[in-house]
Image (cartoon, rainbow, N blue to C red; front, side, top):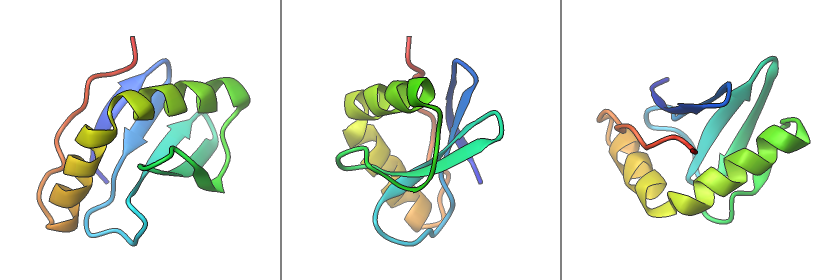
Length: 86
């Protein structure tokens, strides 16, 4: 699963040809969550509150880029990288 961003110990990844809805995976320590690109809703797994807040902030800033990554990954192409949260 390609890594598309990393910040503050959080790793953001996307699977190739993954199931709908468009989403990404966020890992922080032993926690993992699947987060919808549109609306940044956690629909599977969990993250600590602080990490979840940072992921939502980052995702809101990069929604269009995340959709472009999703489209590429669905076509079995490298999704690319997105700037980290600063």
